[in-house]
Length: 211
Image (cartoon, rainbow, N blue to C red; front, side, top):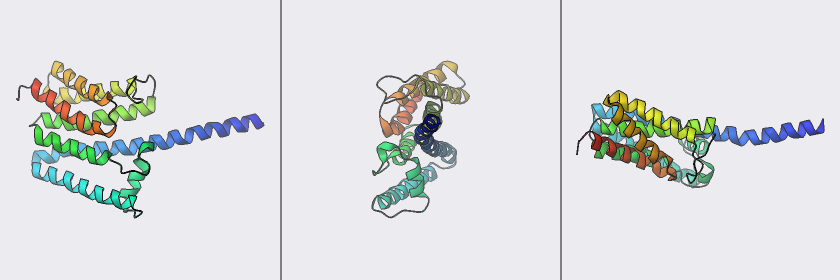
């Protein structure tokens, strides 16, 4: 009886960090998915898209500095705490900032449809890579700070599907997906939010002969 109770308690103790980590990952990637509306806004007005990203970034930076000084901003600070990784505890959480910067750079550097593919690769490719990696786990890729083969495959297939729907060219879609996946798997922490859209957008304009 004692051994069963102890085993059950140990199992629950191991599960709690996993559940909390998964919850944080889901919240982080929901924020990623929200960025996917930017190409739709940009199709109407790039100025409006930039304004939304810039305003959101400034508001977040102010809220995060207030949180670190002990003053919580309703909703924003709570979401930040829930979604932060262990490495971010007690520090300024850079993820949302680099996410917005990555989207803004893609809009600034690349014309359509390269900018749209770049932002979708960031929103969905990187987003699903992390979620699938957390949910399925499995084989970890060496020297990538724990990234998984399952997550990388998810990134590849998601970006390939999105790129094919936009470009209508299988070879180019697979090439763009390969570039996005290689960038996603690099152990760059939050900088992948910038590297993925910049690199994916660049690969797209090269393939389309836009430069």
